[in-house]
Length: 457
Image (cartoon, rainbow, N blue to C red; front, side, top):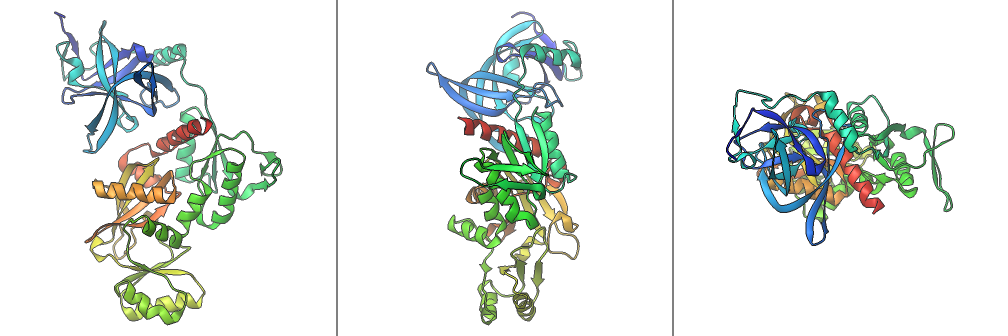
C-alpha cells in the first residue's frame, strides 16, 4: 500500500464481518492492541475452530441498541487496563474498513461501557497503513447519529428483551431507579414490584405469585431481589416462590438469607478459610468476661445480629464498658456478636462490588470525624482505591461462599492482612457508581442476561 490514510484522534470505521457498519473508535498509538466493547461473551467450537459470541452496544452513550456478533478466536491474552488491572481477554481477527480501505486486524474483547468509545484502535492495527494527526479529529468524515441508528435497524439489532421484576420496597431509591433505567436501556421490560403487596398460591399443581388484589405475575424471566432487612423473611419467601414458578433470581433466597444472618455468614466464611476479625458469640452473661478475652480485650466492637448500615454497632473502649454493653444487650434478649477492633484501619474500610464472580468496582470509605463506622449513611466519605490481588481474591471467595451473584463485600486492612467485615446482598449503587464512574447497574443486567440464557439451555 503506497499511500497512507491520514486519521485523527477519533474516527468512524466499520467491522463488516461483525455486522458493525459504523462504530466510532478512539485512536491510540500508545496502546499496542485494539479493543472492542463486548458483553455476554460466550466461547464455542464449530468445525474445529474456536469462536466467540458476544453482544455490543455499538452506539456511544446508547444502550438501547444491542447488536449480536460472532468472531473467530485466535488467542486469549492477559491485558493490563488503564487502571493497572490485568484481565484475560478473547482475541478475535476480523476485517476493518477505514477510509475506503479494508484489512484484517486483531481485537481484544472487553466491557468498555465506562470508557465512552466502543472501540480503541491500537498501533498494531494501524502499522504501515495510516498516519495519525493527534491534533485532528474525524479526518475521514462525521457520521450522523440518526444515520447510525438506521444502519443498525437495517442489519437487525437485538430485540429479544426479557421480562424482569425488581422486587423491593422503595421505587424512589437511587439504586432501584438505576437498575430500572439500566434494564430499559438494554431493551428489557422492567417492572417495580413491592414485596409487601405480593402474595402466593403455594400448591404442587399450580404455584403462583399474585399482586395487589389479584393480578397474576406470570411469564417472568428474572427477578432482582432488593430486600430491606425488615422484610428479609417475607422477601425471601416471595423470591423463593418466583424461583418455584421458573424465574431466574439474580440473588436466590438461600444466598440472601445466609448473608443477612451475620452469625451464619461468619461461620460460612470460617468454613471456607476466609480471613475475618476474631468474633465471639454467647448466650449466658456468665461468659461475658471470657468472650471479651477471646477477642483480645478492649477496645472491641459489639454488633446486633439484626443491625444494618452501621446501626446496632457499638465500640467499647474498656473492658468494663464492654461488660456493661454486652450485659445490657443480653438483658434485652438481643443476639449480639463481640468482635475484635482493628485499630490500625483508622476508620477506613473497602467496599468491593462483586458481580458474577468478578470485582467490578471498589471504593474506600472513610468514617466521619469522631466516628469509627465508615458507612456512607453515617456521614462517611468515599474515594477510589486500587485493591490488591489478595483483596480481590478474598472478596470473590466471600461472595462465592454466600452463593451471591451480586454483593458488596466490606474489607478492612489489618496488620495481619485484609479481613472480611460483612457481605451485603443488596449493596447500594450510588457511592460506587459516583466514585468509580462505572455502570454497575448495567453489569447487573448483563449478569441476568447470562443467567437466563444458561437457565434456558
